Image (cartoon, rainbow, N blue to C red; front, side, top):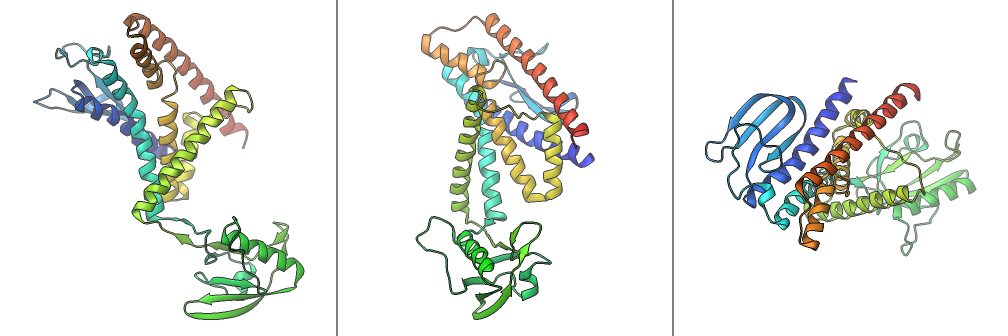
Length: 355
């Protein structure tokens, strides 16, 4: 429970602070006044005011996320002065659009950088080679003397088809499975360092898996920095496409909703942290991407809802009355809170009664 709580605080803090920093940086670049940038929520425990800009940096009691409070967004506190021409509501539509958009874009950028860090620092399973990574204890590979780093050259003289779209590792795995079912002993030709060896291995059908299991996994390969960035961008694109397709299928009622709230995210955060540093890094990347994309949905109270109004203003050249827009956002916020309560109740029920 404690691990899940700590992990959840870290995940939310990182994702929300990066999101709010996107708003902050864009506002500063575009000349919009920022009243406060806060780390955490609740009562302030430490504050520092910039003498030149009068902006307040604050550290708050509860380390869950944070916020960026811009001048002219109906969040001005008593005694705060909005410098003429620097309020958010005084800005042209294109500036307000960029400020609202860049919170989510910073989340997407965070996801890209974290996935690139994962690919560069830890790597992925190398499915394009037949080099052995991990030897699973108790399986034929360990008994036969196969070692991590060995490269499987052939099995009973057979090699994966070079022209096949199937990866080398999957191709070799299929050959091993087929030959194991046909022959009591399978002849492996392997390369260990500069030496070529031949091993005769008996691979019976594993009772648990219902098929012959040698007991090896692919080796890891770390990407160079540039390749890591490119692969991360490709991964982010594919994940975003899957998210949008899933949302469309949900709206079209082609699949049931499977939504997780704070309790569910906390549980998954703790599990990712317990599995190791790199699992936790990839989990933060996934949450950051989800937060960035979902926050752009045209729902009142979210950035996407505000962006929708700005886009309509840019099209019709007329701004919706401030009171009307605020009322719509308040209604949207109330709806989101109600939905969050329902999802949280569902998560609590699943946590205690379905395990």
